[in-house]
Length: 127
Image (cartoon, rainbow, N blue to C red):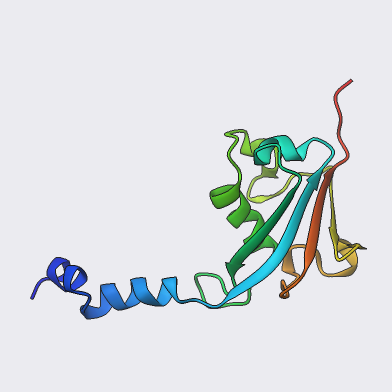
């Protein structure tokens, strides 16, 4: 039986991997944007999200994972460079994790917990 026929019948490793990805545990979080960043996210300031609890390598989801996830799944605007620069959060964006500066929490390496509230605020404004 070919891989294609295994996938269509729901058997074989490829189909099992697809099911495993679909059944990944999720984390419920609230992500908020302010200072103009909400324009990149459908002009919506607050997003209640359910994200994978682990990344593609099986490690716990971190803020770095969340930033990539937001760009791939939540951002509707094509101007990603206003949010990320070289795969990292753009300088000039303040991040609060549960009302605490992300620098106190480990920045991009902070492991996201169920119920977290993560706020991104742009401190750069045109004039």
